[in-house]
Amino acid sequence: MTRRRQAGLAVLLANIIWSTTYPVSQMALSIGAGRLAALRFLISGIIVLPLLLHQRLPRGRMLLAAIGLGLLGFSVAFGLEVEGIRLAGASLAALSIALEPLVTAVVARIWLKERLPRLAPYGLLLAVFGTWLLAGAPRPGHVENLGGILLLVAAVTSFGFYNVLSKPVAEAVGEISLTVVGVLAAGIAFVPWLFFGSPILSTPRIDLAWALYLALGPTLVSYFLWFYALRRAAVGFAAFFLYVQPVVGAALSWVWLGEALTPFEISGGLLVLLAVYLGVRPERAVERA
Image (cartoon, rainbow, N blue to C red):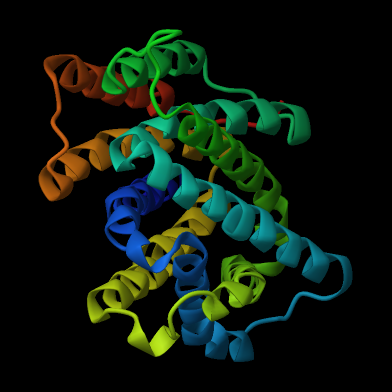
């Protein structure tokens, strides 16, 4: 199997797992967004901390870069995302991910000098249109929960920058070290939220179970897979698989949360999947210009 296909399979699985973040976060929001983030990242950091014993620890500028990326991609982005989910709903949150590949592609072009395959721009446009249908074809003056939508836009923008900036750092320190340092930095940043509200020991067990799932699946497994893919393919190639998230996320919101899907939304999901196909179909991997 080629390195490109290995990267494709890894990032596809990562995005399927990431898709579960939206409905799971909404079901666990009764404990508060900040507390949920603290539990998620502290649990994941503690679990994988022993892995650092067998890794080359990042130092100096690389350590600062890993910490900064953890705060950007986990603390800032996740905090904005969870609050956006609370205000706008899990289904719309899953659909807002359409902006992330756009931001990622633009930043990768500027920062890493990457260029997309020939059909990729058409795929991006098609994915945006499909996601607009998935979101219920909102129009100016007819958009509800504007505050939540703006927070979600800010979240995916943060994720987009994180996707690009993490590639050179992952190549320098390894995906394991970058993930462990990042989640620990994020967990520590959210520690103050553990002391707000009711005692942490009174947290319902089901919410603790959801936090544990978020720590293991959408955090550890997905980010290991993401960094694994980035070391074998360009950011632009991997970013196209992010479009899997709105489709799977909307489907999960329909199954788990009872959020209805209209024919327009189903059509939009099919267009998004076609867009992913157009974006990753070329046999030649994305190269740096």
